[in-house]
Length: 233
Length: 218
Image (cartoon, rainbow over all chains, first blue to last red; front, side):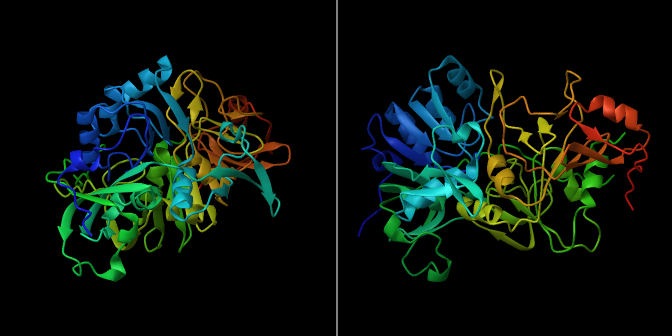
């Protein structure tokens, strides 16, 4: 069993124009920055990207937007990206905004082999337009379909070569869900350890969900909003 | 009239020992500064943390540890991390005791609009639609009027809706408002603000006895 790829370029080499991708991360926290850089180098286009956010102008998915590689974004919040807003308003970029919990649950459904979920989020709003509604116990819910993505690109803290993954702090976010949901999952990790070194009790995603591993050499891990405590005067 | 900290302090009176609380971005975040001494409250950050601590000291920021506003934060003894599905699972299943969030508009039937201004601002709803669709106890913290001087407490929302009939209480710089059959009801006045002034700034239906007490913090 060898899931280890030489680098991110090799791991994304077969991602073709028009592919649907899931990209883990919340804001810039826990994003697969090496895979994104490799996609930018590769110049693949017409991508549909499922990701909670769209990066910032010069980092994360923002780099792919700058190169006009993205045809459609499916996200819950896209506030921090001027180029994104420009492409959205000019009609170059198609955007589907969905509630954050719905995004997570549609990933989860895919990873658990369920075709759809019912959620109350978005009932009575624009999000509900054209969707099936159903009442359970007197409350209305929307039918939301599981995502169908060709590739999931995720970022983990540690992995062994079996593909077992461990995430760190809030960099976990959508990563385990997307890792489970992708037809082919590429996990870029900070640290690769020998099988047996990770306690089986603490593994967040079992290796069966992970097809490819890339060990990142230098993670930038940019901070979007650096906030610190101010000492009392 | 209340300042932002006054609004946060007023909302903090809703806290109870053992509560799990989700605080939105902006004024709601300030509520964390008014948790009474000795009261155990765990803050939920919907990006995957229960038991959110204060901002880190300079030099100890961790890029892997942020809140829902993407700010660097810390954990506390008893904190836990989880993925986004579990995070919204605890929200949808009603485990979060109190949700405080901002709004652009609140309607007199409890509808809330806070995610989109057509043609002007399209940032997205983030977790707001999930929160307002499921949380049992939703308090809105906001300014009473917008930058154009128009009331944000309206008969009906004019902006795209985030959630229907879900807000339980609104706290603005002018007072504390609840909901009854006909519309808003003035529960308390901010110090130095008259009922007439509040009525003038509230475009939705407002019931008041005219003798509402000033907000007390103790």
